[in-house]
Image (cartoon, rainbow, N blue to C red; front, side, top):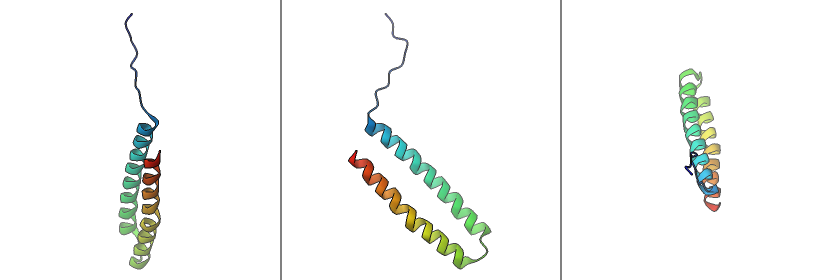
Amino acid sequence: MLETGLTINLSIQSVANIAFLVALFIYIVYSAILVYHWKTYGSDLKVTSFTLMLYFASSVPLVIIAGALLMLI
């Protein structure tokens, strides 16, 4: 009998890696858009710099922690 279906064997680790990479890509695109808009439409240079610094100081460690937790799976 002929097989007509496509079988895909993915482990939980592979799915988690793909999900992390997709989330990382979305984070990078979102961050680039955020930086562009803050630099283009920001009225005060000090506030813009502080906001971007605070954004990256709080979000980059979260991405690193998510990557480290993914390695434990």
